[in-house]
Length: 460
Image (cartoon, rainbow, N blue to C red):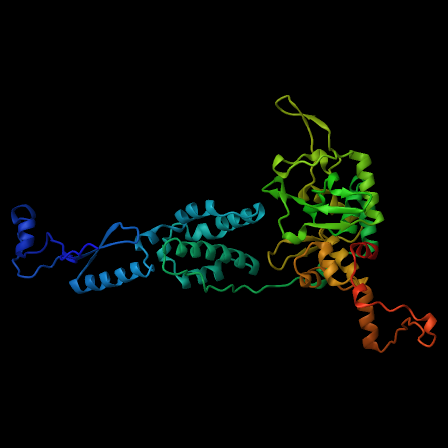
């Protein structure tokens, strides 16, 4: 190892100092007369090498400060805790430009993060250096400027991730100033009545009010409990008509107005087989007769291939002349926004529509939603006594607790039962006779307590 320089730290000559060395370096006839002095007033420069071996230097007022800095930085380099303060002088906007291209993830998640950056973080912090960000400043901004519990949570999640990677990137900053920032907005829940799906009779009214083309679509949604992106992506090749099974293998997502195919975005649990009821099979048969979808199996990376889709809009296959004179065939892939144009008039005509103010965003929303079909299926299975683990598999959820907490809702019958119990009304229960062993129902052993997909379908 090479010996350390004997003149480190060294004193830097000053144009304002009158010591002999400074007068020699900067002659009075060129830089002006100064009062002679014995001690030099120039700053002390400490020189060192960073972990990459690059020569660096920093100036200090006194020799003692420079020596103390050299001791600390040499220790940091040896223990691999060194960070270059100048690397933290990059602004948050410049760091976003470096950081964002390295981030992967699903399309919808990336779009949400980019929206949160542009709408909330960039206007406030874009031009602020990383090493100038402070905990209290971030906390005050989040509390005062970002409204809503969910918005605060998502924005803070993004900012924390950016700054955590700045710490990891060879310690651009020594610590994450947003690590202990708290979400302060209160999460305001929706009223249970605004979450409970319509009854079977209400759904029947909505179905009659919909244009006939869309009735098989809602029948399928009502019987399978699939998500919107799952049944609008359902292809003929993924339905086994003989086995009465539909295989969920992909989804259609809305990428800022552009519909795209994507592998299942939620989790591995969403890749599942869904048993089909007679009503769902009837909807399948109607759409096969209408559109005659292709039985081919195209790859997701090959594009939409709408000719394989089971459900499309009524203009599917229609040819339209474009402004440039060319003729294009309409694919009519269903989007949620376009379907709302027939859904909202239908629930209004059925007499069940009502406007609800979202307590989180303050926006006005319509009840019921198309997504409530999924909630209704979960509640039906729950009331039929299907075990939670089987309902979880049927809906494609990772955790059964989410099925109980988010998807099952009280029914009018359960509310009536609670009312009668409180009022002291005794309900008759049907029981089997126990005196005659020949009439006693057969007992099931522990191996027969599970519920198959077929049982779940029959419960619907």
